Image 1: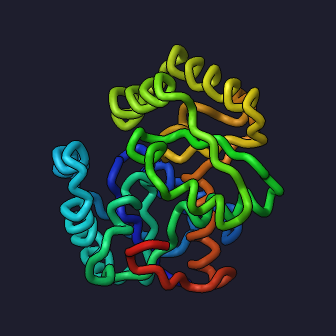
Image 2: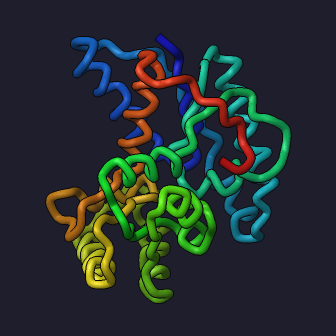
Length: 240
């Protein structure tokens, strides 16, 4: 079995990915069994000024340090359970120390396998305004929809004021449900939860549309790689 490295950026999403990966092991390999996994996290606070400044190259440098530490710990490949961080990982630069799964490719592949045609995208403002998911979905003939600007602001505020800090309130859940209903009215047949904390707030039983849970999809893909059910990735940063 391959050794997974989890390159963490936001803690709640990384913790959910870690749990989901280990739980997949319990289900397939037996009680208390899972492939080796190492998690490395440089506090997101060290990068927030760079996020505000749009300095993605600086953020990539910080994330690259985590990738190197994972390689030094013996990891064979990595995942980064933070969708927005992939905007920095895609910047030009030296190859990362480990190959990794690109979260948007994992999510878009699942959307295609499910036969989706128009997918709503919920994440940080950086991500909803950025090219990663429109590109990944377009490559598979799927349209990407984002909420209107006021609702994007609501989503982003809840992420940074609450979700990444482990706060999950019913009022915020209802705001997300309201926004997903608007996406359904615009013809979306699924919604991609592409801030890795959102699945902790919006569960399939409350979502007005089928959900693409980026965190658990990434964990599942990583588990398949670790067991050899899926080829080792080759992406080492830069555009997917």
